[in-house]
Image (cartoon, rainbow, N blue to C red):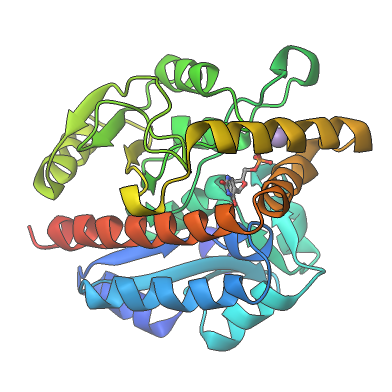
Length: 306
Ligand code: PSU
Ligand code: MN
């Protein structure tokens, strides 16, 4: 019954690179479609591809269209995702429906991991992962990203998680599910806009070689989990913790007042925080993703060289 290839469209450049064992880096599209405003989103999408190429790897931005999981968007594909209001945010539960009914959809961390694994791509660069939301006891809102990290062996390079989430609970779930959380040159789990959340990572790693070795051993053990490579935002781009905390509090209050929940919540909070900080958070967001693209590409290149 299983026939993934029927629903997978890998572009020629990515397919060639994979066939030759060259470095490939997956990129998600929800960050473009629902995480950032136009036209910054399209500009970032292009910049990420350029950064990854400069490091010697091939970028593969992932999305859904025409009944296929597209692995490796070209310029037209990127523009369509960045500019189409009808583009749907797809988590794992949405994938079969979106493919069967030929929706235009953007992939989250969960579905980008899923697609990368289908395609044979081991490295994935994003901004922030989803996690356990604040107020989880009432809402039961836990991102499907965590379940995917528990069951799909792809390495995810991230600037941690935003404090729109309950970071201690997010880390507890990752521990329960056996997902290694590595801090790149830090012992603290980064909080997206801030270099530190005040929570510890499991293990600090200081070099690309160390990251790659850990993931290699992880795979040798037959582990089904992904791993998290937590890469703090560069200091020059970071936002003061108290400033971002008050913006997040306001955004959360506004979400409650407007009755926003479920899959709309994360995009709503992102755009509210952007408004409240007068675009400062967007600037930080752009810088941290680019920083992750450099590290993710370096890991992929090292991974493929051996
Ligand atoms: N966190 C961010 N920026 C984002 C997202 C999360 O700082 O763009 C996106 C990612 O695509 C992530 C998704 O996988 O939101 C999680 O959404 P949810 O909480 O609905 O699972
Ligand atoms: Mn959710």
